[in-house]
Length: 62
Image (cartoon, rainbow, N blue to C red; front, side):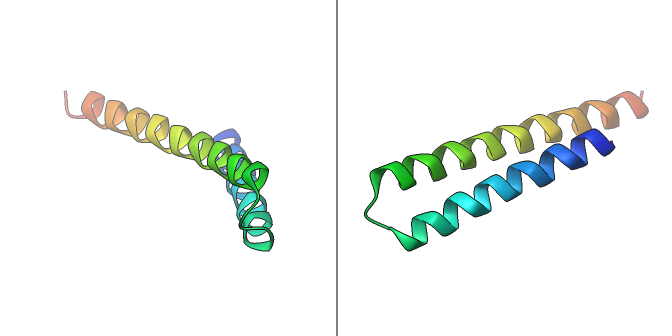
C-alpha cells in the first residue's frame, strides 16, 4: 500500500504543479496540455485503484 500512496502523492503533486503553472499563464496551450495530461494520469490511477478495491471487496464476500 505504501507504493500506491507514494504514487498517488506524486500524481497529486504533478497535477498541482501543472495547475498552478496554468493559473500563471491561462492562455498557454503548453500549460493547458501539461495540466490535461497530469489530470488524465491521476484519473486513470484513481479508476484503477477503485477497480482494485472493488475486486478485493468482491473476493471477501465470496
